[in-house]
Image (tube, rainbow, N blue to C red; front, side):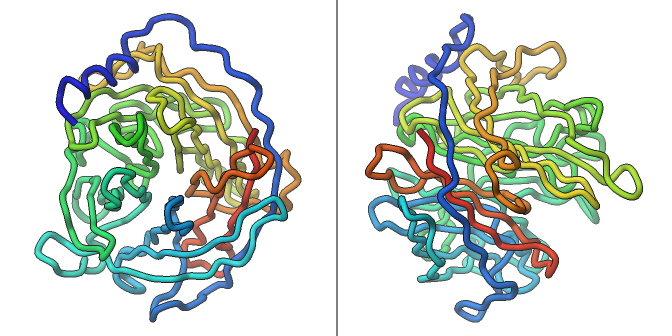
Length: 359
């Protein structure tokens, strides 16, 4: 895609200054859920830490990435078949596993990478995946990398300068590039930070929200815009002691594959001793300020509205939801939305898949 085409698409995203366009109410209902057994093994790996998912309509398969930091096995992704339909969601059948590789063809050494989200490029079939970098025990920048279907390294996209790990600025530990999606028919790649950058203020609390950032770039790399995203306050204080609660962005998808301005965003809040609260918001970036090279204070944030609070949908226990993708369309015309919980390889957590129908 040429720079002129990219500029035209970008213009549709940021030049508007009118109020966000009203959209029809969205109805959401639960189709069902599945849980993958703890420490389930496939292809000589332990399946867990699933933090990103994407659906490939051409093959009918799903791609899932593990956030294993090459400690239980090589950093990797899986392919799987997941029956999703009007009757619910069926058991997951894994069909393949591929280790991710560095530019020199070698595997990632332990703790050298922290994969989080994965998207299949609708133009090439390559896998775009994010990783969070490292602040504890040394500074390593987050990144957006591109791999082939065999896991081999293809390229790396640039990141904004403000998202680089520095001693007094950049992402907090484990709150970096958590969410990603293609937009504008694959012409744009959009990423979201889980929590606020150090220079953008403290994280969310029970009494105040916080502000994180969404970045838009052309699929071949150039950075086009960055928007302020307002996080909700945390739903409850941790128990028995305070200070162990948070809220952040963990997944996003384009609302419509061709629309460069509207997205569904998952906010996953967690309070130790209480549990999780997962909400899905629809956001509109068209009237938001571009904060790519500016402080976030005083910026006009994206517009957002609540689409679904999983607590209100009758799901008995919602775990650590970190992944989301559109699935196959139902005969009713509704779209399916598949959510996945990262179990952190912990016995007390679950690798939970939830299927929703969205009108």
